[in-house]
Length: 269
Image (cartoon, helix red, strand yellow):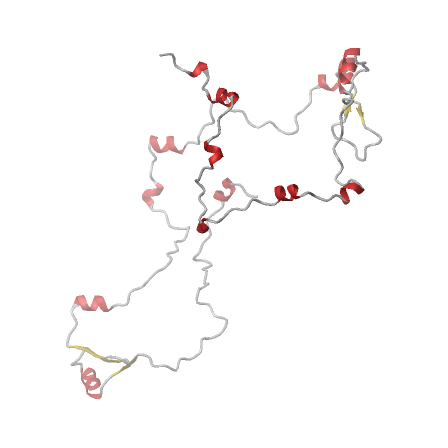
C-alpha cells in the first residue's frame, strides 16, 4: 500500500488531454419521441415581410398551449444586445497541470523568509531512527560460552499431567522440588467428621405408610384447613372493625418490657 508521501509525489493527471466524457444522462436506449404539445416558434406573413425588409430587427411568435407572446422591436440597445447573448455555464472547470511560466517568475529571487520556510523540518532533539530488524551480531557474542547457571535456566519446566483427566490441563501443577507436608498441615487437611445425629436431606420421593393412606381427618382439621370466610366490602364487611377480645386483651410483662425504649436512648431531663 502506497504511503501518503508516495501519493503526494505522483504528478497530477492532465484532464484536458484525456477528458472524462462520462455523463449522468447516459442512456442505454434512445429516448422515445414525444407526441404531446411543445413550444412552437412561428412568424406571421406580415411580420416575416417586415423583418425581411429590415424594418424589424426581431419579430417572433411563441405559441404555447396557454399563452401567445409576440416580441418585436425596431432597434436593440447595446445593453439588450449583451443580455441576448447566450450564457455559457461551466459546471466543472478543468485546468491543465502544465502551464507556461512567465519570464519574471523565472528570474525571481526568493527572500530569506521563503528560503527559511522551504527548509525541511528538523527532527526533535534525542530522536533516533528505528532499529533495523537484522542487527549485526558482534564477534564476541558469537564466540561466547554459556555458564552452567544459564544452561540451568534455559531448561524447560517439568509439568505434571494427570493420566485420568480427559484433556491436558493448560495450568498443570509445576514440580519444583520434592517436599513433604508437616504433621500440622496434614491435620488441618483432614476433613471434619459429621455429627452423630446429623441427618442428610430427605429424598424427594419416599414411601407412604399404610396408616397414612387410611387416615381419616377430623372435623377440626377440616375447619383449620379450609380458607377463612369473609364478606365482601359491598356485603357490609368493615376491615377497620376491632373485635371485643382485642379490646379487652392485656399485654404480658414480657410484651410491656419489649415496648419500652432503650435506656441508653432515653434523655435524662
